[in-house]
Length: 120
Image (tube, rainbow, N blue to C red):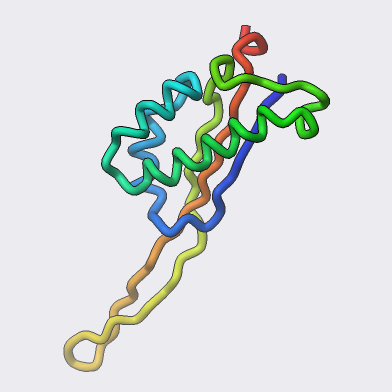
């Protein structure tokens, strides 16, 4: 089974926020997913949209797919993973000399596309 992937490592948004958008497009055709994400107001939708476009571009390149080239209409999003990435840790001063930790979270976005004829 051929799976074409694309990644966005260390995306500056928490994985929890991007997962809400990823759940909407998981299992859909690639062109339908891009249409859905185009009208979503979330910032995570823009990030996921770019990763899907990158995966579609990888699918269209025959050099990366053993001489095969796939069209966007025949690709399905089979693997959409949003994993937690490293955190930037900052300290916020609080009352009485205490300090609270601020965690600026990042995420890893991974998209896998599979041609529809290989799913059956």
